[in-house]
Image (cartoon, rainbow, N blue to C red):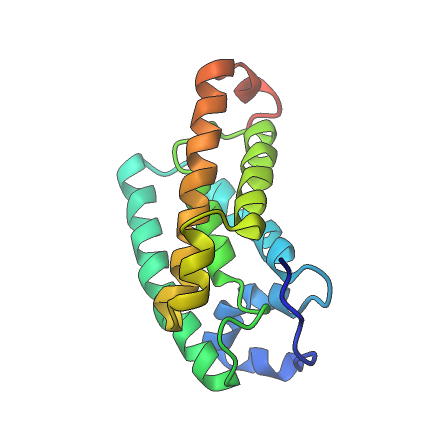
Length: 172
């Protein structure tokens, strides 16, 4: 179920640092698949996060989630549109959560990307319900965090079946 994109937004919005972050460093202004583009933009920071300790990575996730509630709420209020497709901070945080404790390699990044985008677009229960009924920054963030939880679980099941062998492919 895809959302109809509202009128294109101006790059001048990105002069506001809060909107710059909410729109994923400008990636959310993509006219085609802004959520997917925003998830792609989450990969370079992920390459750094994957080298953090588990505790520091978890702290980054918590801070990013809390910041996301504020950023997404602010963007919604500023634009007057709930969960505008260009708001992609939630996709970025969702992808980072999907990749928590995944081996740092291109194989696992691609697998995590596919799982996350699948669940973020499909929105199985309760994601779709929350997406429709929970408003504001928390609602915007929560549906992607739940999609990330489903994606993370699939990634961990795949990892338990395959082991870390693919983790040796294109290590970072």
